[in-house]
Picture 1 (tube, rainbow, N blue to C red):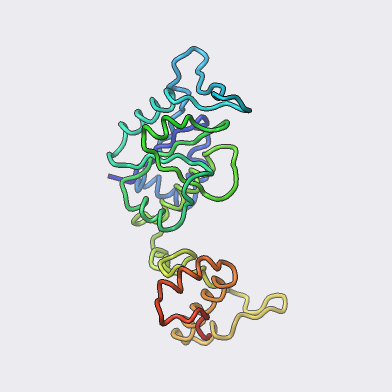
Picture 2: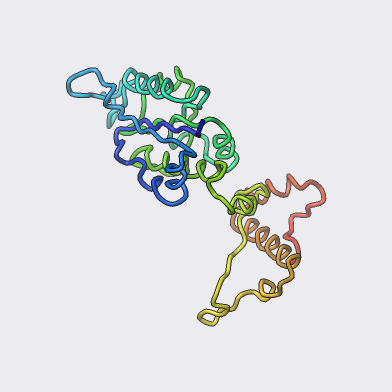
Length: 246
């Protein structure tokens, strides 16, 4: 059975969107994963298809109703593989990182709830034990762009999706080494007075590997001290906190 994603949204026309193109789109066409977008309005019970109401306690905006959202969740959960996590995309959630992406990609799929307005009634989030996930410290108009980010990150890790590129996944930023990726170069060898680093033209694979490792360490240390600290801690006492010699 392929990896199966259900997206609960007020705007099902946003899917597959960019997920229908490139690697994700090809994998979708090949049946390596499946995507269903369910319109939350289809689970409203009144003739106006109302999905929201004013917040208790006052305040600006509207809140998505728990009864409507719960009915949509039940339909999605029952229409796909069991044991898929039910995820709500929210700025207050756990930040999405590569470790979480790998964990989700290794499972049977996901059910993603995309909020709108001021948010979703807390009671349905608690009743359904939803996993709250954020794609970054900023606010979007709704959960749909965040859902696309999460799905793209997961789908590219599914077996057969990246093809020959799967072997290099560990060297990417946030890969198994926990470092940011080294710089890349291609033809022409000189461009606007800028030359390719000589080591990459040497044909010496061990030297190239050492250079790339040193570049990754330097970039990570300078740009993401948090990731560098985690990397140093993972290496143990042998790591002195300095990048490797190029």
